[in-house]
Length: 309
Image 1 (cartoon, rainbow, N blue to C red):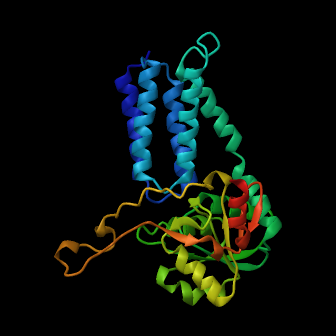
Image 2: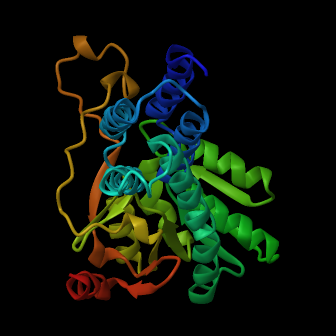
């Protein structure tokens, strides 16, 4: 068996990279998290069932402290914790040999169940939005949006892109590079130029990290873009998977991020600097919300939550 210390070093290194990832969307962070826990569970270790359960709970607290706005992480965490309870509620004679074996099977099944979710979102998006020869406004860096435009490329649909830099981490640059390298014409702009460029777009489309009855969470700057779309009279679309729907309004407040990401030498300046990555935007600003299994007009989102309670 591999010593716990060696395994922990590899696992902790993987989790550290995930915690420090400030450029990727929630889908990429989830994929990396699933891979890390899958590697942990595939290895025959000296962990007892109780110690493994405690270790998983402990490490997930750290992940969610770093990415507490990501509903996908909470969904995966909740599934693992539920399966830990199922394991202990099952008679010893009927359960798997170990918690590790039980959870490994469940993690693999979880991945298989959800691995095609973005493909389904892409199909629904093309059924509900005309992308042909359009100019599309994008913000931040979304794995779901990337996969959508990969899918559009395969359909040989021509379109142009306006992409924001997405401060403070400027991860929009990576999305702009990705699309430009895949043959799209991309115009890259600073966030404050959004209102200037929105009239040149046919619509805006983006992902989200969590959606509630009255609002959704996404990269800061989203609300200004949604309001800008209203002002110039163009649609504002959101694509997301259903795991990001939450009936609970509880969300741990986002911690302020380093002010050095905005300006250096901040401590010597005679004013206050605040830096956040995420913000809340009213769902009523959404023209159409597109998931893998259903599509909602913006004004119907609240009804969906009310009906599902």
